[in-house]
Length: 601
Image (tube, rainbow, N blue to C red; front, side, top):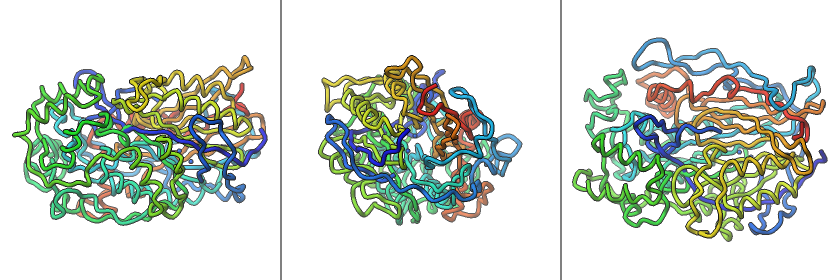
């Protein structure tokens, strides 16, 4: 395949993600905290931006791709799950963590057979890191749904006050990676595949941009003198770390930690990523609670106001939970009425205008602010002024010589946490892949193919048709230059082969769909991806999972920034009991994924 040095850039956007499963048999999988997470469905990132054409116009040539990388150094596996993984010690109840042997690499020949000797022939095309579902949480925000914990144990996480410390430790891990773990190639960039924030709040957006680009962060809102939220409410439904209250979590062995909440809201410092980084928008970034369409003035006022509901009966919690998971309340009418009904039961908190929901335009302007360029850049992180003009959040960017990245917006601004894609963006994607048929393409989105089932119209484009995951999968399969579709949303590692029907060929294109677990829930992973040409008619995609830089073993007396990051992981390991499921099977973790060169069998 000839190499090309140019790409196009465009945009479209919105969304955020959420939803928790109804308390009956449905299990939520990734949303507004625990409470709003998608049901158990299946199914993620890239370098410097290029100029963006109008969304409907044909893709045009733009900025040059990076120069050919330097010769590879020795593979670097320290800090990856090839070396070791955090694991709970034997026992019952609250379990401390230790180090366990790393996970082996699994070779998958679903789409092409591996050829002996390829390791000695291969050349590197690109290497990068995917972060997904960071869910940076303003845990004191009045509009959060912690009270759904009355209906479902996974509707609230005891580690939610430590998301910033955990994310900074992940940035530190990425910065410490000297080279890629298989090829020894330098890492080209970092990409986030959505749900960077949790509740579409300005506080969270500021924290996220400083985590990624560097700076001082005070993960606190409301009264700057002390924490105001469910963890010092005295409500035994939640872990009360500073109190001697025998809450539901302490009954399971969770520790009593004097000074925890004061430490959780202390200033944190992030070095910022030392690589270029690019964002992809998720439903939690785009909508309040990851599932409610913008526009309700009562909910917007409640978000910045001085009242917070912290308790609800199990029956009322289950009713609200079902309205979310069954997609019965896309505009938030049920929750609005509930908050009005229980206004007298809500507690006084300090109002804070910084908790206001941000719009797609504000999200774009924040990324375009040179103050958030950071060490690695670039300004805008892939977004351009054309995004603002068009009101879009999709774009392309050069990954490496002969490889382009395409970042999609699969959120549905009409409401609900599952996604879809509009006709204009789908046509733009088709045109972009055609225009770069001589380059390999890696596609990024927040949602997986199986979680794109929400085709509710976009309020800003009511006449435009929305397309589901099957239609997007089919389009990608018609383009033999597509190597991978990388995403998140389901909070679980999952890798799926796809065989397409390539245009003008009975054989069709093939690509891998790579979904990566979240960083808000155990096992709190990110993923390194390496693209290589095996020089034998096949390509390989190597995936390697990484953890944050925080130590596996915690010291409950250490409430420093690093100590809290380690505690973040340990609390998440004890918050729910399906960490093994979220980690995926061996075939979904550290892998080598084979493809026929050119994407054809």
